[in-house]
Amino acid sequence: MNSLLFFLVRLLDFYTLIVFFYVVVSWLFHFNILNSQNVFLWRVFESLKKLTDPPLNYIRRYLPNFGGIDISPVLLILLIYLFKDLLIEYWPRGQ
Image 1 (cartoon, rainbow, N blue to C red):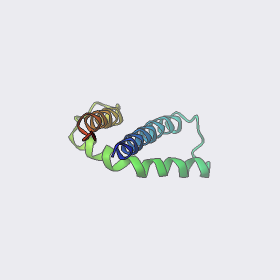
Image 2 (image 1 turned 180 degrees about the horizontal axis):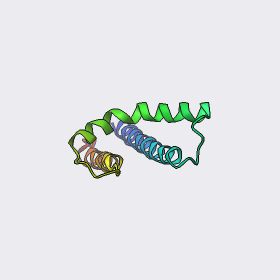
Image 3 (image 1 turned 45 degrees about the vertical axis):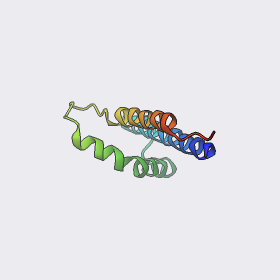
Image 4 (image 1 turned 90 degrees about the horizontal axis):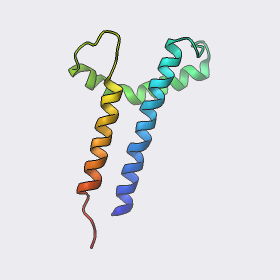
């Protein structure tokens, strides 16, 4: 059963990286460091957006407006860490 726990923890770590890369790439597009006309980069960005938008939109629905600052990725990463810690703490251990 511990191998399933390790797999779930690694999956949550991988999703955290996806959220982080989505934030970085969106900033790079926003500040015109990456060219938005590049088809490959745009497809990577769209793929990351499709993977991260459902939970981020759910969080954004309940957050107040902070002007131009979006803290939903930070909150999502914190929630992932909380879920991961709870999963590790309460996972049934074999004797």
